[in-house]
Length: 67
Image (cartoon, rainbow, N blue to C red; front, side, top):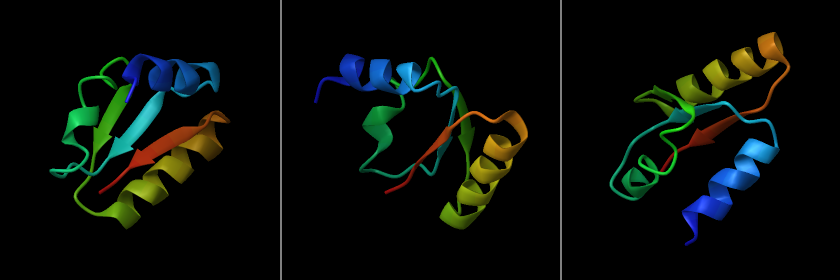
């Protein structure tokens, strides 16, 4: 996968924050996403609600990455 193209698309969408639930299958995304604000969570639901809260407060999109 072309990670540069992926991160460019996210930046063009105005994305600044990624809520990350790290696992073996998505750990390879950590390095390409280092230019974003990364927030780590153990529980996917908590990450989703945190991202929703940030998006509502800032008016900017957030991403959630889970396994």
